[in-house]
Image 1 (tube, helix red, strand yellow):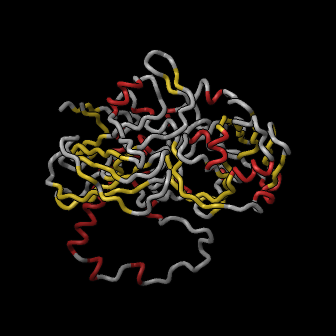
Image 2: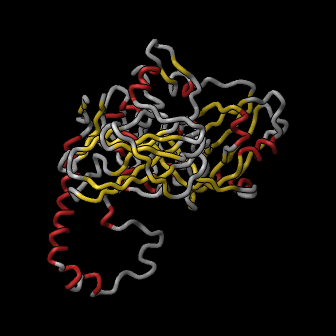
Length: 421
């Protein structure tokens, strides 16, 4: 079996340093535990009164979790305005992403919108053009749904081989939250879509005027005009005060700071759906309108930013899987690069177009591991290998890379991004 190591960008040294530091901390903790000082001696936090109930009115994570943050890759984009950062998947469990850790992708920076002055307009091929205030929107029936949101470019840097050393960077352009909002169908029905209204163009209020065409069938099916996520108001970087939710479809269509919905009889072929967000094939031709996100999975622990620090013994492997076409009834994992596959244990709720959490517990004997996961979705689709994708798509593309990810774990428990063939 040939193993191809790369993973030298953007800062493999920094990632490994962090991993080793974590390992050292765990080792020190083991020494203290051996001395049993933490159980036999009174600790500082049990000798003094703590902060009162109003010390942190909105709450905040423990100071010991300060390393759990979104991170960007400096060399990836020309500037930090039209750029992206990544969700720390290796630090999370369950399926819900905390709002403050949801990855960001902006085309014109974060728009600071005054909600009292914000309006949503519906125009074009409708019987009655409408303008909604935020107060108007709050008077419509609302729904709650848990959906994943994945950037079409998630894993895009891995098309030509193993590149970024951490699942935060290879797979972190995704998050999974509960959205609260008004079905777009209700607003379109109020405006009265004309018989020849087959498409909508949704547009944001940010400086880029981000826009995308969406077929009417999808708009009337499950799209939401959302104003809350995980129970709180959208955060500015996620489109405050209102964004579009397009379940299962690529993230650039989930227009943030939503300001206009135009109904037309054909797609607009705007910049973002011609020169951008199309899949370039080996022969130079591009595939357009690749809306749905295919089934995909990744092992989050162990992984390059989450090494095995306990050495030999009982080990918990975990990861997440998702599909834009339904649920994930099954995930397979392998410890030896695909020679033997084992069915993982699915845990937690299984919801349509949402993340799913899987686990596989095993006794690690300390020998090197080649870890992979393979998702099956409810349509019967099975996540392909990277080589199977390349055989059809070539290596020119950026978007919709859902190939199987491989982590190599050495005898010390350090993990690295690799490819095997």
